[in-house]
Length: 195
Image (cartoon, rainbow, N blue to C red):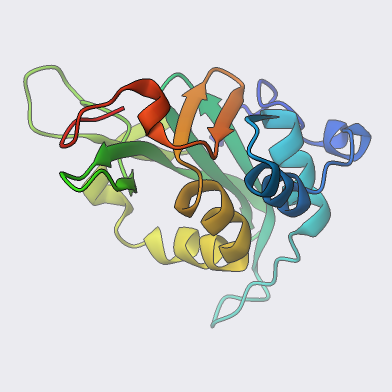
């Protein structure tokens, strides 16, 4: 069974009704003018639904379609969901991403995306990788589908660079992504620490 996406802001027909926010220009303006910007799930998913032109290639290209890509924002992580049809049957595949930020001893901030959603089972070294349909699976189960997520990231390379590569502070909360281009020194973070 595919996962239920009705809780995702801007999913389905609601995406067409969402405020038309151009993420690229919103992010660039935030960087140029030095102010914090908050993006909702609805903002991000509306942008994805308007700009994603998906085409399936390969041997099964005529029997497989990508119907959409959606972002679910949860406390401390992002879930990126690919909605597909395989031989007419709906399927969802997702991956969890956590953002880590550190400050080098030189004071330079560094941002990394980590492909997991936290511990799979308490006290075991497995991390939640994402979901096949409704089933939460460990990270290793996603190795064969990771190229699909990489291709999606490549399509939005500019937006990803503006949001994750150039923003000094990133916070993920339920239903919103908060990005701030101001240097972390404002937070009084010690070199070698995290923020």
